[in-house]
Length: 318
Image (cartoon, rainbow, N blue to C red; front, side):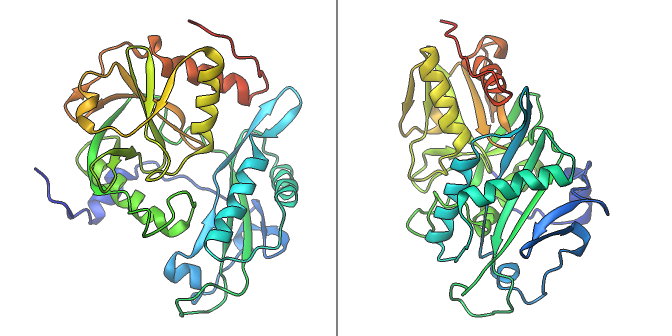
């Protein structure tokens, strides 16, 4: 039994869990910041900025892929409409439309000569403000970098986290607010401190919720199960995978379930824009025995890759 709030500090731990810290930008990197394109090294922020002190900001994670027609940002409209909705929920004013944000993102890709890339738009409060009220105005950053699958390609070893997902009446779980990722960082860091690849968080009632930055699915007797909206962040990759599954004749059920239900599950996987689709080997003592290459997750990962790279045809394999 581990402590509910473990000590996960220390310099040695930092280097163990961050062995391959990457450079997200260099002196030539171009970002859109403060209404113009500039070098990333010139995008400075006041030490008194409200978002820096309170995490009061909204962001998106978006991917661009090389396709036969050139670089294509996958579901750009859906991502930017969700970001604008998150801004409204957080009472953060923003002056851009989804179409304008999409055009700016393509220009960021062009400026940096990127095709397969990860895009990070961020709407934040840059003014010096120590009050606990919503900002009167905001700033926009759009950055892009070359980033492989966030969780890699190997099957993951998960552990149920001692940290829970927040009560949805405390913070809106369907809002991609920067401050909410403190919870994700704590859970992921704690799991890795115990030798696991990633965490699996429960909700306040003990039901399986999601990973720190990815949605969770498990397979049993040919059916996929995933937690419903409410206590999770309903990801765009999650909904895309469900659409692909439906097209392929795979049944998906959204319902609440406890970790004990995973004991006799056949397989499991995570979905997310950064992670894409990644298989799961185990959750604590539960080891999924079905060869991953024979699972729905493996099929969906291949179909998803075909979709985002320009081949929209998805055939049933049943």
